Structure formats: structure tokens, C-alpha cells
Length: 79
Image 1: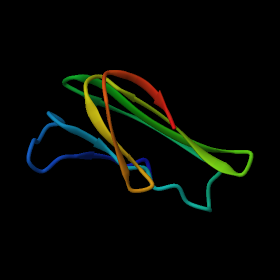
Image 2: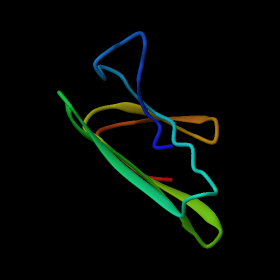
Image 3: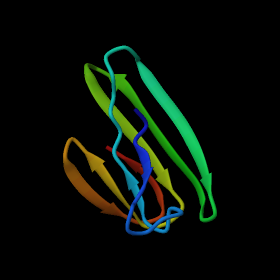
Image 4: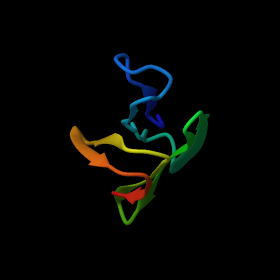
């Protein structure tokens, strides 16, 4: 549900891909994965009937939200 996953072409999180999958069974979900590059945090929550995403990456990454790929730099990103 958090969507933090390694990229088969670049193992060990050399390339970071995050594709969260919210579920109706939860109001929110948050988790962190420690990698050799730093911490990756994926969080989603419901706000005013919509799903909000807060993703923090230690280096450039691809974040996929509702099928749309966002190429981002190091930092925290809100969707």
C-alpha cells in the first residue's frame, strides 16, 4: 500500500520508484525504508474526500500517482 519498491534495472534503490496504492480499509498509512542513500518515506491520508500524498526521497526518484509519473529531486513532495 505504501508503494516503495526497487527498480529491477537498478537494484539496491539506485533508482527509487514509489507508487502508493491507498485502500478503503484505512484512513491513512505511513512508513519509512532506510537505504544506503538515506530514508524514503511514503505517506498517504484522506483529506476532504481526497487522497493526499506526502513522499520524501533522499535522491532523485520517480513517484507514480494515479498512473502519472513525476520525476522529482531530493526532498519532500506533496500531491
